[in-house]
Length: 346
Image 1 (tube, one colour):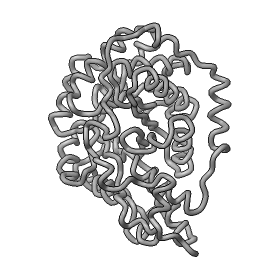
Image 2 (cartoon, rainbow, N blue to C red):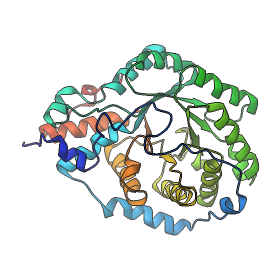
Image 3 (cartoon, rainbow, N blue to C red):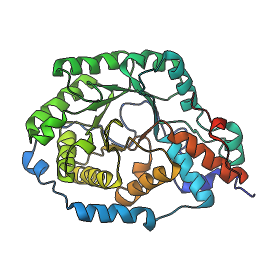
Image 4 (cartoon, rainbow, N blue to C red):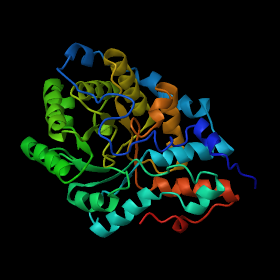
């Protein structure tokens, strides 16, 4: 099977940026300011209303409107690798398996596949490694000098129901341990009870506790009852200073879905139009196949544009996704599907 060895073709369709263009682990995205947040504008926040049927119809059409095949698909999948937050949030996590996961994040695609694809010169590595607070030191040590940042899930993850002072202290502790990014989960009861000022104040405290670390705010969208609540919670989180808004913890019964993502990215677009600040987006939970990853990337390109196909503005929270992407890349390179054990995660 003939394959292209021209890395320029991969750059054209969304492959990883050149090494001097991407600065992994940097707190401030290279293309713009961090989101400073500010006071709660309740009128604007509550203006976020969603027609569920229309949102679902639009989300359903997205995968059909744009498709990528052959070498273009391989290029998009290489780009997808660079925006993965490689995640392990299991109860039996150990420093050993976290170190192995960090090794995978630094070299996520087998060298022979990159050579066949003509992508050996590209800086293919994951967007971050995401772990529980207790394992941040092990991840920081394993990733030292790699340019891959450590993200910590903090603030009473996944329920977010521990005392507020304790959650804020956990955020500070994760930053002090070396986490460059903090994924916090909101109190869903604030949204369900329409306590918008309380939600804003909570996220604001987390933002202050993060210091220079990037703040990703998890909405737990599957537990917010309506898409209108998702839109309003997205707006409040951004007004409070979220650098990213994230769909789910991955522990809810319903996690990342395209209608939820559509609502959230349109809130991001409206916030940028209003303030000039670009906020990132992270879907998480249930993203296990290369096809699903492409669907999310198509959503970002259609709704926000190419700048939201870079790690500074877009992440995919996943654990098993990388294995399927590697299998698809090997199929493109060789014409054959390989067994999953040829692409071990740890």
